Amino acid sequence: MATTEVETTATKPSQTPIQAKPAKSGVVEAVEDIVFGSIAGIVGKYIEYPFDTVKVRLQSQPDHLPLRYTGPLDCFRQSIKADGFLGLYRGISAPLFGAAAETSSLFFFERIGREVVYASGYYSRDRVLPLSALWFTGAFAGAFTSFVLTPIELVKCKIQVPTSTGADGKPKAPSIASVIRDVYKHEGVKGFWHGQMGTFLRESGGCAAWFGSKETTTKLFYLLNDRSAKSQLEKDALATEALPLWQQAVAGASAGMSYNFLFFPADTIKSRMQTSPVGGSTQNRTFWQEGKALWNQHGLRGLYRGCGITVMRSAPSSAFIFIVYDGLKRYLSL
Image 1: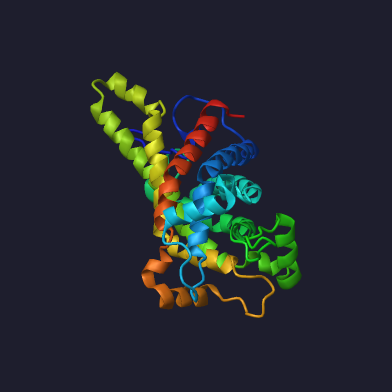
Image 2: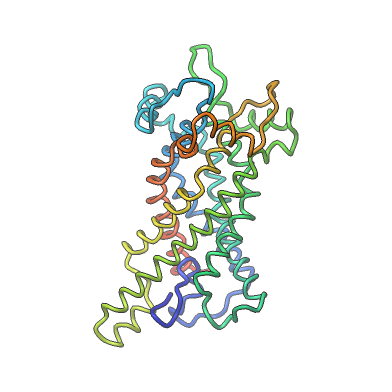
């Protein structure tokens, strides 16, 4: 991480000039990305999942029927009344796996993106990458991660928004196995990537903002801390230390809020595509067809339905993800 002379590398503490450490092999770096990213992703998912359930239910309301929920609070109220608080955690096993896969993939592919930038010859390895390059590596990571994430999110969405009811008239959540079986039976392997365009747009654009905002905010904090230092010795010490925990949290929170707000319409369209019934007589809509139908019915407001609660839950979740990941990289390096 850096002061006025060195750019920040908040998402990759191993590149931070904190202490002289032996260079790690690519295999070790990859293992750390996968293990530490998985742990961070699981922690974040437990924090955000009830809000994610409400978001998906708000997004997936049919456009040909009156709205079932008037807003996030009403959705919370009705959901808890119908299924209890634990009902908001329905289907979390798949998302926990997904969170581990997503977060580890993001940090893994972000590192690969850095290698691509270095290999291009635009920047040398003896200098830390500028913020513009780090926004690119975020987009690179998101683009590749989207292909890992789409099948997992498809299963999660179908469990969160069940289309069948039980004998008591209440929605009956399908099991993970039944969702996988039904999708494969009616749509084959290709069906698991239904909604891929929405995931790709959300992840590539959103992750550019996720990593980029985190790096940008971290750099600003280092610059502010440097200016408040009273001596050169204090400045040198600040440059080799991690940010205070609250500043790390703010940087992580800014990342999550940027990620979710900027490309939320793509996520809304994806959720609607992935909660459509499997095996029905109606042909699946494409990304653009679904987006057009939603726009015609509800306009811009429909594309951002559930955005407020999503941005709200993303702040603590993303803060914890980066704090956990950066802390593990710093103190438990393999």
